[in-house]
Image (tube, rainbow, N blue to C red):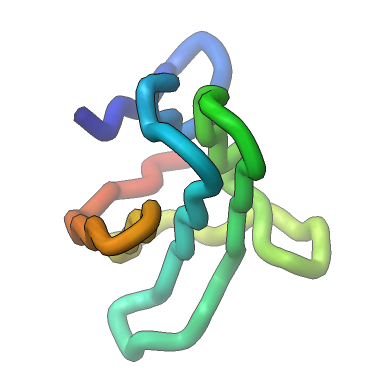
Length: 80
């Protein structure tokens, strides 16, 4: 499950993904905004920042989680 935590502005996926995982955040045009990768069984967290360190603006973003042969996608809304 993907959650948005208001007290800590971050999108997180729980631990339990075995092996390495990669979480890609894309804008609605399909451009990569950020990539979060974890080599082990840990929580994946996107802190709302772009790859260059600036904060992503308000809007709808797409997320793609890839772990082994498993791939999941969804949407997240950033409100500032």
